[in-house]
Length: 218
Length: 295
Image 1 (cartoon, each protein chain N blue to C red):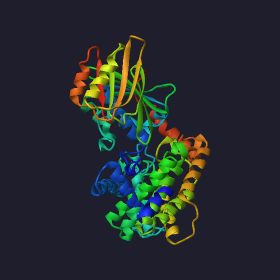
Image 2 (image 1 turned 135 degrees about the horizontal axis):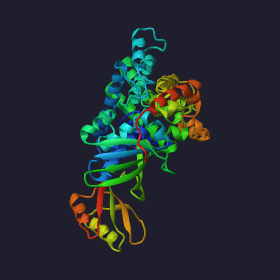
Image 3 (image 1 turned 180 degrees about the vertical axis):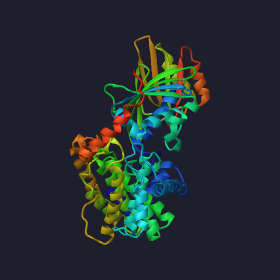
Image 4 (image 1 turned 60 degrees about the horizontal axis):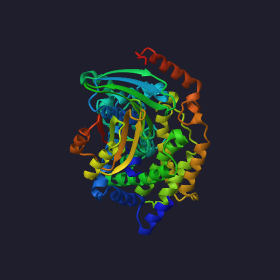
């Protein structure tokens, strides 16, 4: 907490939860997809579903998917700008179960990848990613974050950790989950320093590694 | 706040200067860099005020907008009742809060819903009392001192503690800023923050339709007037006994006792008035015509 957290952030109104948080969720969705989305199905839950239109949450989510910042005045026009940017969007409502009232599911499709993300806006522009595809996660994305998928085999985590250690990158937190023993696994790792591109390439070329996504704080 | 006052007192510093030094250390930046960053925030407050005072801004729902412009015209007509500083403060506070509701660029201070109060107070003092840019920047650091204490010891969320945590804290921040800008001591600044907050104690968060529009926009105007009153009360030397930390603790107590209906759920308070319900029914009926996808 510092002076610029209370005299700030600079943002597009009207609500830090519904607008600034929603832009951040959109940006994180785009980062997790790893490429600009061409199609997005957006399902709003709870309070998001009830008031998204008056708060401009729909525009804010789309603005984030287009890569705009929380203080970009184009947030207001994001729905109109999306087609020209090659993004097709549709909205619906969905009960996402026991999640924060301001939650959303983004089903994103890029040129080569698809991903489904569930995220919540916690207030003050803070957000948390709760689900990536079938995996439950808990990512605040305040630090550089790596998301990796691979088959659940011994040695993968050690190999990743060794690469990071070699690059002088300190791991702040790590969480591993898997569908079942020996099936697909997902690793979420927060690091104190951004992971340089060379290290990401090395990580992607580890045997058995499927996807490695690097998310910078937004 | 006691900690901060002691820190300032030991070195004979203002709250603003104490926060500037804290910020330089936290970010590893020079005084100029930290002040320039705050100047940037002030500039955005200015452009939001300008936009809201001169343009016909409209919220997404259409419920609010144009009030800042009307208040500015009224003030210029010379027929306003609240005097030059307060008259200008309520016009600016409304204007900025309307720009927020219309999805314009604002500085959340401390939140988006309460973003008009600090610019209302600071920019009206500049225009009417001749305060300089550098004094306004100092004022923003003083305001930050109060906001940081409130965030740490309580919360800045209407959903958590009611609107006293948003507009109440913003008024406390603005009152402290006004006092230090006018040459008051850190103790007086903290006193003004306490007076402002105690006056808004129990302020519920009751947005109509859950939108940051009614009563939020006009609550920014009344909050700004409130902050100026609190600053004058302290500068005049009216005795005030309550330490700010105790007022903050009371706010936590009051806020946690509020029923959920009065904490940003849009179900109680102003949001429950029959007319508010009718407005919401009308707003959201148009919504049904929108194209929806099914999962």
